[in-house]
Image (cartoon, rainbow, N blue to C red; front, side, top):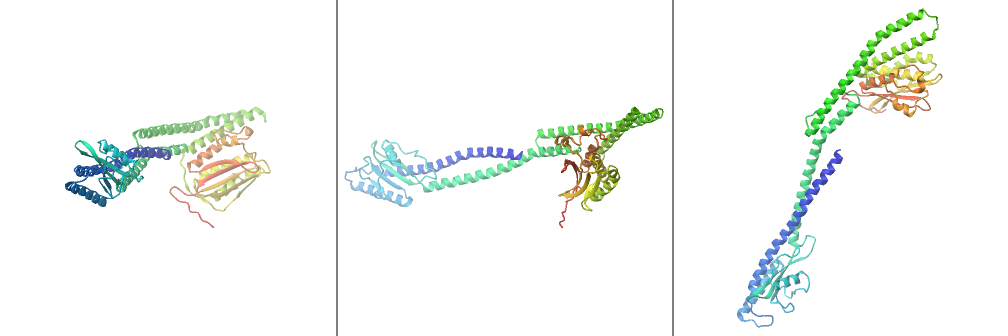
Amino acid sequence: MRTRLLPLLIVLMAGVLLALGFPLAGSLAAREQQRVVVDRIDDTARFAALAQFVTAGPTGAVGAEGNERLNTLRAELKRYHDLYGIRAGVFYRDRDAPPMAEAPGGWRLPDTGESAQAFDEALAGRRSHDPPQVWPWQRGRLTVASPVVRDGDVVAVVVTDSPTGQMRSRTLHGWLVIGAGECAAMLLAVGAAFRLTGWVLRPVRVLDTATHDIATGRMQSRVAAASGPPELRRLARSFNEMADNVEQVLEQQRAFVADASHQLRNPLSALLLRIELLALELPDGHEEIASVRAEGKRLASVLDDLLDLALAEHSAADLRLTDIAELATDRVDAWLPVAEREEVGLAYTGPAAITGWADPVALSSALDAVVDNALKFTPEGAHVEVSARTEGDTVAIVVADGGPGLTEDELARIGDRFWRSSRHQNVSGSGLGLSITRALLAAGGGTIDYAPNEPCGLRVTITVPRSGPGEAVTTVRT
């Protein structure tokens, strides 16, 4: 969820920063150029003030006083060009006529371009005030012109043509500062977004973990409603209330099953006893009595299994370090008489010693149920193999039989309470054995899985952890 939320927040923040950064960069460039333009306007105004006292026209003679003023103007323009590298000149209205003064010598105005446009504006009596913006990637020059006014008429124009390298450098430096500020702000925003999304999503992750725990049978899991937005805290409290109610309902159901199973045993035992007394008065081999006796025993078996299931779901596991291989061998030896009676092969294959963490009693009961189920459905002359092996941080006990196996649909339903395949209805059982097995294993952190066996039959895998709570598994290679 964070991977979807963070890009959205980052894109939005980047858009906001860019929306602020571009106008700021444009304003900085305009400010730098405006400062240069104002400075050039002051310079052209000063030169215009000197030029308006040079009375001679393009072809007229200049007196001693006028010649002195003209020399002063030329000296000022030359010193200005030498000092700042800015071309400057005073041009008569006739652009083709020789200029009044210019620096460097021989500089002439072009017939087109910004200089010509500024010259024409000054002839009309307007001082340059808004030349086109020069950006850092452009190598243009900045032209400013001011009219020289004498007796109310424009007699000449002062033009300055400035290089823009320093101005563009200052603008670029300002842009770099703005960019650094934007990057810093973006980093701060990303950090804030990480903290914000973590603050918002932390209760969601905790809630997801608690939901998974409850879904896998750990009903005591709850959510701490102490952090996160108020809405998520209310959701956490509501979840805890729901979990409490669900756990209470499940406890009531388990208690009801256990109590009902226990309370029904006495009436059923009395009923079976009366059936046996009634059978004494009937001829031997009476079919109805035999059928009633069989159904009564089946009902007693179902009640016993229901009680075992209720106890398995309610009791806590007594986990301890157990030799899984030794336990599997012991259960195989215990079931050998049944296998011999059914004329089915039964053997354990695998290492002599494998340790894992399990409840020995619960694991023995689970393994008994699986082996019993395998022997029931394995035909005469076939074989049931029990093996053990390590798989990463778990120990697996595999029971593979040579029976008819199950279809994919049946594999999806195996282990459900009271479920039995329609092909095996004539085989004795209540349909609760594998449900009890799953409950016993889940209490100790174990699992049970089912898969087809090759070439035929069912392959049941029981797994238990190799390490206890808070322990790490050390793998030894030989």
